[in-house]
Image (cartoon, rainbow over all chains, first blue to last red; front, side, top):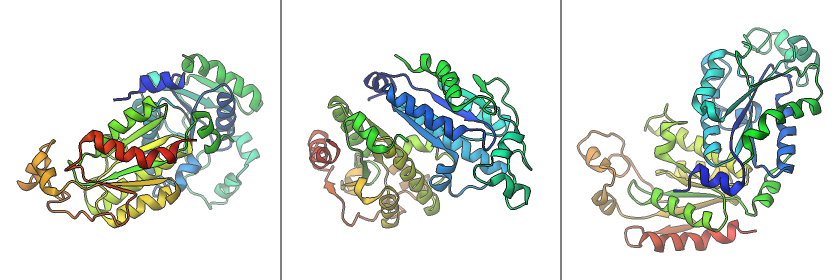
Length: 187
Length: 187
């Protein structure tokens, strides 16, 4: 059997799941894409798992009820485990709104391979940005159960890193992430 | 954005999903593991997706009804797509009993990246082997909807390769697979 250790050796990297949590508009996808770019330039192989993308494919049969959000995260965490078993660094961008959901991801993936990064831009800033126009829709009542508006976001209890993406630039945020990530993935 | 082409280039391989279909006991998992071993020794990065393994994790909330079998394959095909997007060769071992299910996998993954290999060992031989003791359980009525016993297996219409694993050895079968695979994955 070709196991994770052999694949990590072949790829010259150690694998982790980097898990971005934060409100819609806090910069999860932007940071994921920028970190993948930098890591790729350094020779690391990564895979981005993103809420929007997965809801078009694997999770297209899930809604936004509490139960469906949990199932969404459960599936993503299980997929992350598959990528980890292949030696690949997994970069996950999911709101992950509740402590229960944050813990679920951590439990499935396991502590050793899990890096939780909380993007703490405030609701005011995320709503002001409103890149996808979703906050406006939620305020108008066209989207129900929208995190921050009529659905809870519970601040992570003990993340590996918190970045105030309401204040720091993308470049500054990338550097902060790399400080935490690099020693976990280099052989 | 770091896309599939860039990752394939970095890994020095082209990606496909190799999809083994056939009865329980026809040798899907054995062949998958042996092919992974050979491809790894040649420098290729692969990931095995296997019915038994996935039903312990991602698909633990699915049973064996027709609907659940379809959802099982739908999820696996969507995950294969994620691996393909990472430039990784995906080796899938799933009974995939009906034409509808075989077509579903092909449609989701897309023709260009799909290699269907039908392991055509007969029911008699698979049942005689009964490595996991499942046929005995099914005959005793302890397992319902067991493919080949009280649930249908529809022979694939136009597989890329058929291997009679009731006659050929593992080594002979591996060579036959490689003949079909190698020119699809080499740069």
